Length: 559
Image: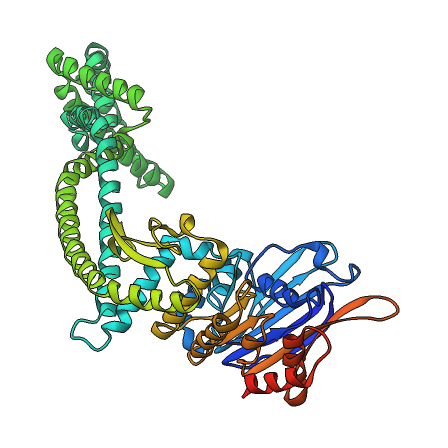
C-alpha cells in the first residue's frame, strides 16, 4: 500500500507531505482545485516522462517521493532481477532538475525509467474513464481468468496454481530446447558447407605423416646425397694425408713423439711438450677413425634423393597453401581441422538428442495445456455470470459478456488458449472484442466489475480510480461505492470523486483546495474528520448554499 507521499515544487503544490491510510480513501474538491495533481505526481513514480512545465519554480528541483508497504505483493524476485535492495517498506523517488535532467531512485539506488516503470506498475494502478487500454490487452484478460481459476481450485487435489507453475517450468525447458536445437542446426548448416573441404585438407595433411618428419634432418641428408662426389673426394684426400705410409701426418707425428721422448728426461718442459703432442696425436687418430667411418657411409642413392626432394617440395607447397612457417604449425592446423570434422560429425547425434528432448517437452506442454483449457472451460461461465451481475447493477441491464478461448498455434505464457473478452452493453447487439465494443464509460464500469472480482482472487497493488463515476448517479453511484468498499477490504483503494454517495463511503477523506495569496495560486490537501467531512458531503449534495436538509442527507450517507 501507499503509505506516504512527499511532493516538492510540483504544479500548484509548493510542499506537501501526506500520510495515507489503508482500505478506502476518498479525494474530493472543486473542479480545477487540483485533484489530478496527486495523480500527476504519482505517474512520475510509475516511470513516466517528466514534463518540465510541471515544475512550479524553475530555479529549484522538483521532488516526488512515495513510500510503499510491499510485504504482501511478492516482489522479492523482481527486486533481485534488477539488482535492487528489497525492503518491506520501499521508497521510490523522482527528481527533476531545473536543467530538465531527470533522476530516478528506488531505495536510494539510481535506476532507469524502464526499471522504475516495471516496479511502479506493480505498486500503483491508476484507472480512469479514459485509461481502459489495459482491459483490452490479451495479457490482462488471461491474468483475470487465470487468477479466477486459481482461486476457484485452491482447495482441490490439483490446484490451477500448481498446474500453471508446472506449465511455466516446462515452457522454460521447451524454449531452451528450441534455442539449443536452432543453435545446433545453424552450426550444422555452417559446418556442412565446409565439411568436404575440411576433410580434403585433413586427409592431405594426414597423408604426409607430419609427426614423423624432421625437416632439418631431411635437408641435411638432401645436402649429403646431392654432393656425394665432393664429399668422397674430400674424405679421400683427408684420410690419405693422415695415413700415407711413411709420409703420412700420423706417422710423422709418431716419429716426432719418439724423438721428444728421448730428451724429455732433461727438462720438465720437454716432457710437457711431449705430453701435449701425445694428446694431439690421440685426437688426430680419433679424427682419422671418424672420418674413415663417415667416408665408408658415403654412397650415391638417387632413389632416396628423389624421395627426400619430393617430401621437401610437399612441405614447401603446404607452407605456401596454409601460410605456415614450419612443421609444428602444420600439425596445429591438422589438429584444428580434425576437431572441426569431429564436431561436424558429432552434431548429427546432438541434434537427434535435442529433437527428442524437444518432442518430449512439447508432449508435456500439450498435456498441461489441455488440463488448463479444460479448467478454463469449466470455470469461465461462473466468471462471466459474476461479471455480468455486477455490470447490470452498475446501470447496464442489457449488457452481455462472454469469454472466448481461441486456439493458439504456439505455446503462450499460460497455455495454448488466447483468452478474449467480448462485450456489448446493448440488447440485440453483437458481442465484440472490448476495444470495439463499448464507450469509455461503459468500459470503465466493466473494468470496475472485473477488478472487484480480481481483488478477491489475488493480491493487487494500490488502485486509484480517477473520476470513474463520471456520468452516473443515484443507485449506480451507491453500487460503485459498495464495490469499492468490498475491494478495500483486500487492498488499498483511493477514489477521486465528485459524487457524495461515493465520497461518504470512504474510511478516510481528503479534500483538495486551491488558494491564492498576493503572489501566486497553490493547492493544498487536507484530511477531513467529523463536522468538516459532514460539511463537505453536504456541500457536494447541495451544490451551493448548504441547507439543513443537505446536512441531514450527508449525515445519513456517512452513517
